Length: 329
Image (tube, rainbow, N blue to C red; front, side, top):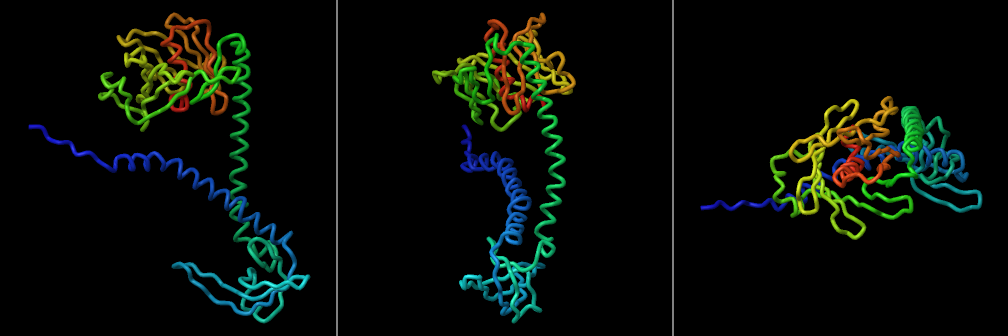
């Protein structure tokens, strides 16, 4: 008697929510930083400096408590512009002492505002502090970025990017003429060709570990599985062609193995770039013959192939470039 396996109908939505949590948190953080660093200070400064001049008459001020432990003074009244037009509503920057008085204001996106920047410290200081903390970090990031770009140009000049077969990209690799030669697609479900590949006993590194490399004709060029500490490459029919596993993390070094565990080659930092890990890597055979050089170009990678390397090694170089951000961190 066989027991029926109850499928989880919420598995799809749960997986989507788990996969979207990190990107959504990043986007929310960026939006909050943009609000406190750009929008809020910008609106206040624009209103105080360039807002249209008017005269407001404060009529009433009430203490409001929209949330627990949160109070603010809501002052309302009318204001009059120089051309005689009028408006009414909330007036910022005034208090109970201004009730019944005419107060000069500036009218901007936030409405009429009385006072200068000294009365807007609550809106300007958080943004100023965030700018003070962010600018040095951005400066350091740009310093290392431009330094890495200079090193990448040096490596490409050494290996001769224009003389060999080279492609650039990450998920979509193009040649020097902009033609797409290979496109990677990741999935959480194993393709049917890998059903009998024995991957059930392996530990995967990501939530979408199965990768299909598509040729320009949309045919499958090869498959890859992102494993913990490396990856495996499969032929279109599902036959395992090689396994790449990490040997050391600092600096990153990986070894290439045949299905029978025979060493085929290694991926190591390119000679001369050891002081800047992650800039360039060299793929060589077990005898030391160069196969490819993989060079980082910000979020993209350039793969320069030497001669006509064996197809499995070429696939290993392309897969490493696709997954280098994970394999080299």
